[in-house]
Amino acid sequence: QVRLQESGGGSVQAGGSLRLSCQLSEYTYNDNCLAWFRQSPGQEREAIAVIAASSGAADYAGSVRGRFAISQEKAENTVFLQMNRLKPEDTAIYYCAARKRSIGGYCSTEAPDSAYTSWGQGTQVTVSS
Image (cartoon, rainbow, N blue to C red; front, top):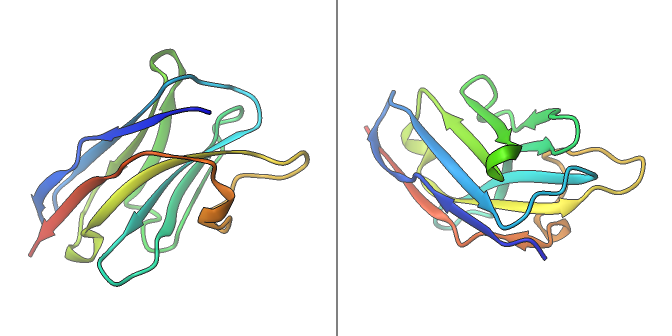
């Protein structure tokens, strides 16, 4: 089972940017979906961005589309989340996660967190107004 470790969280003022990194213990190019989730206090964990490891196709939640970008660097076994124009409501713990894409399926933010088999420990992002 792949192990994941996030980094890059911190505190920033509204309108600022952060880039999160997720280091994978191994990188499989076939049939994996790599995602970023976040969870705010009192809220359910939500998927905000996902990328298909094989094709690089990405999907975003409406709350972050146009502001956040997910990318991957296979040579470094790393997935990134570039977060721009941050808002106070983006404050949350951010997690990266991985799952095997089903045959004929695709990587989407609609997949529930229960579908993901590997998780990082999370990194805190705090956005002040």
